[in-house]
Amino acid sequence: MLDIQRIRENTDEVRTGIESKNAPIDTDTILSLDQERRDIISEVEALKHERNVLSHQVAELKKSKGDATALIERTREIGAQIKSLDDKQHKVEEQLDNLLMQIPNIPHSSVPVGFDASENPVVKEWGPRYAPGFELLTHLEIGAALGLFDFTRGTKIAGPGFPLYTGSGARLERALINFMLDFHIEKHGYTEVLPPVVSNRKTMTTTGQLPKFEEDMYKIPQDDLYLIPTAEVPVTNIHQNEILAERDLPIRYCAYSACFRREAGSYGKDTRGFLRLHQFNKVEMVKFTHPDTSYAELETLRRDAEEILEALGLEYRVIELVTGDLSFAAAKCYDLELWAPGEKRWLEVSSCSNFEDFQARRGAIRFKPEGGGKAQLLHTLNGSGVATPRLLVALLETYQQGDGSVLLPEILKPYMGTTGLHLK
RNA sequence: GGAGACGUGGCCGAGUGGCUUAAGGCGGCGGCUUGCUAAGCCGUUGUACGUUUUGGCGUACCGUAGGUUCGAAUCCUACCGUCUCCGCCA
Image (cartoon, rainbow, N blue to C red):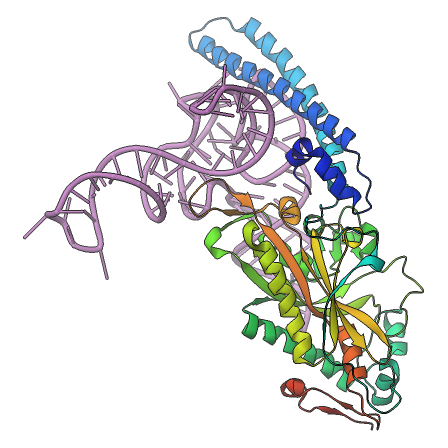
């Protein structure tokens, strides 16, 4: 959510920013509702002040056995006016809130202006192109040969997009999760958390999934809960409605969670194998930072994700998102993409974003400045570190051998017990 | 799922319709003292919104939302949460 004061005082800047995200914005309606709201408040507060004064006079009169009938009559009238103005104020505020909640975050000034993903610049490329002297298989062919997963039975159990990992495939999935968690904890100083995989309406609203993207979520109506699309949601809300000490910033959490996405409207795209799933596993990093350091923290966040890919020896590139491709809540975002040699394409495995105070305002996440003064909103950031399904794809396809086996990087040995996945 | 108890400031805790501008304490902050010394004394203390001549002024906030009343932390209703006991359960 944007600061209403910012919309009021820098209307043009806000409008330009929103339009660069290809989102329409009706600032006129917002500003007139804002004005109406403030007018009502002034009026109702004057009436409440009068009522308070008169009520004290009633108390005095009653104490001295005087006649308070006229005063009581007047106060009763004021009460009725207050009630009607209160109702009006609630209605105006509801309309205003609804509009404000629909407005996306404004891109940071460093973000290149562009219409869509086709204009995203590549800002970094790393690693050698893997070119063995044999015909490369896709992860689906490798997995089928080695018995790593079973999409047919996953579909039987739950439906398409819900994968069943089997044997070494299940262990490899678990190994990757543990490897990434340990890496971030030990090398990058994150604190591990293991959050609920469901969240309530308020929590989903803080991070920006609601109210705009209700259709993208799995919902449990009986209990008014949603399955989380990413650990970003519960972890960012750890400090919802809290005031933190400035000296405790930045706070860095990493979390494993299963993630659930309906992917409504994306049928036909990437439906094969692991490329797009309704349920997948991801290690997520979340930061709570001082506003002055959030962009430096975005760079190290991205670096923390890159190091996972480098430790696994996988070729990757970094994309900077143009304004038109930025998500609703993000002010700036990098995507990390792995090269999948079997699929012969780049696969997005991480998204590292700075949300500035957009989520913090929705969730009332603040810090108290060291030298005293008012609590102010902090900045939230998050990045995948990283998502497993596409990581698994790139890993299998990169490390496949000519004989149908897969030779995994040494760094996974402590987690897998072996580096070789062989045909039975 | 059933029964009961309880939700008050950063924390503890008093408060049964107007003398609450939420007592008192702890903690924090500022100052004084420097032979009460792992101390003592004094002062101070939250959030949001509106308004403003930037000094203030006003309004609201005692789990949340309604209601009763001239007036609600206090009375009523619903909901949420915590704790205890019972039931069920990995």
